[in-house]
Length: 158
Image (tube, one colour):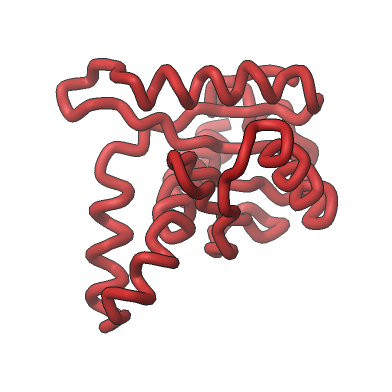
């Protein structure tokens, strides 16, 4: 496995393969998947976290089932651009995944993705209880959609 920039990931991936977006939390992993043309991100059910080995197995089984070609994982930077403990935990998770898979990862700045996801769910009039269960996957969808939009812009420039 390799960690790529978004430009490198766009160049490295074979066409017509889906990409997964991840919002790594302490209790859950929010998931989203792109369509094969990599235009749209769709939220998927969250994964409940247990211990790393089990989380990795579940995530890789999901990737195999969905034929995922790579991952975009949200990097929870502080609003001032500094890296806090959650950034360190996310980077450690990806380093540990390097031992488990050859699939590439790309970090994506996820500042305000959860806020945007919360706002979107509120606009759809989703109840507080249902929002709690969907917020992480909605945030993963926002993370992935941002990366997909950037990849489309890179393709247009070529």
